[in-house]
Amino acid sequence: MKTPVNISARAIPENHAPNDNTEAKVTLAAAAGTQHVLDKVFGAYDDDPGAEKALTIDLTVAGTAVTLTYPVATDDGFVEPRFNLDFNPPLQGDENTAIEIALPAGGAGVAGKLNVVYR
Image (cartoon, rainbow, N blue to C red):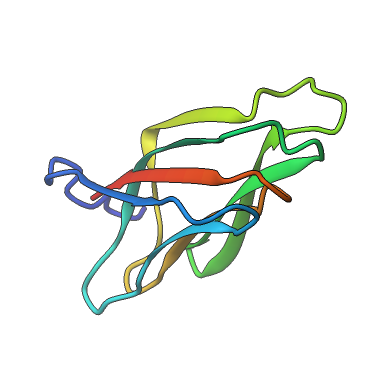
């Protein structure tokens, strides 16, 4: 069984709020001896993107690349373009690997904001 990292470490906030119609992305870079722990991802589009959009989280777990997706907007208006994901237990990538969190471009005149809390 894999031993979890010390999850009592200080939380670090990161954010990306690009211009309209630009992907919002936060990358927790791979570093020797580092195992990222993802606690929370939240954000929003500043207007309805009018098309289906999904937040993605790319990480490596037990040597396998994994992509998690979370719908944040649909073309029929059923999903709110705001999101707030708390991970309990937190998501842990493998040591020496990156975690990438991306919110797709919102379309003309629509900006996305992405916030990440990790250790």
